[in-house]
Image 1: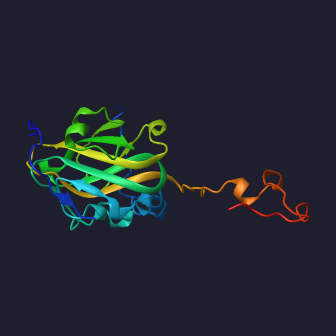
Image 2 (image 1 turned 180 degrees about the vertical axis):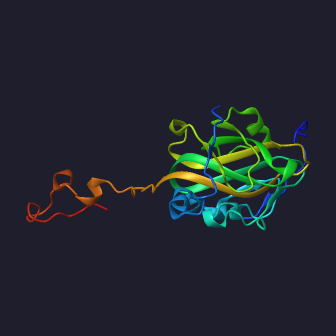
Amino acid sequence: MSGHGHGHSHASCAPDGHGHSHGGDDDDDNPERGQQFSLFKHIDTTKINCMNGIGNAAKLFRAWHERLDTSITVDSDADEQLLLHIPFTGEVTLKSVIVIGGGGDQHPRTLKLFVNRPELDFSSAGDATPTQQIDLAHDRTGALEYPTRIAKFQGVRHLTMFFSDNFGDDVTRLHFIGLRGDFMTVHRTPIITAYELKPNPADHPKTGALADNVFRPQH
């Protein structure tokens, strides 16, 4: 399916540990599960970029209790590959991933994750060594959770998800992507030095009789 060089144009969607665990159907909708998979709230959805996809990729990242809504779809366009760029509004520690895909052969099979590589396209993502590669199994309910190597997924400001193939169809379909982890707001300190905030009279020349009592900042 993927013996090509991606020389064609790709549509854009609108705004080695391969283990997984089973969440089970009994507690999938409990509030704790929803809180665990709440990183979608910290995605800058207006800047999500989905390459070679048809559909609104931002809607793939939604609340846990809405994961079974199969009316939300993103389909690959020119071939079976999809590349998603996901920027966060702060720093994330990504602990696990869930992918609900299409039925049959349209379900994605190989997922390559890259941390803080917003420049990747199909060619470079195909050549680069992923932060982690995950072999996906068919999942229509969100029962399969794929843990990341947490040490490599700290300080994540941008996540790239490269779905490189599926189970044999020309089209790869996605319905839901769940991200579990921790979020930390990044505070950017304004560039104001202590010198500017607390002027030191000794740094300025003294002029006039009042020089010892009055500080006149230089401009």
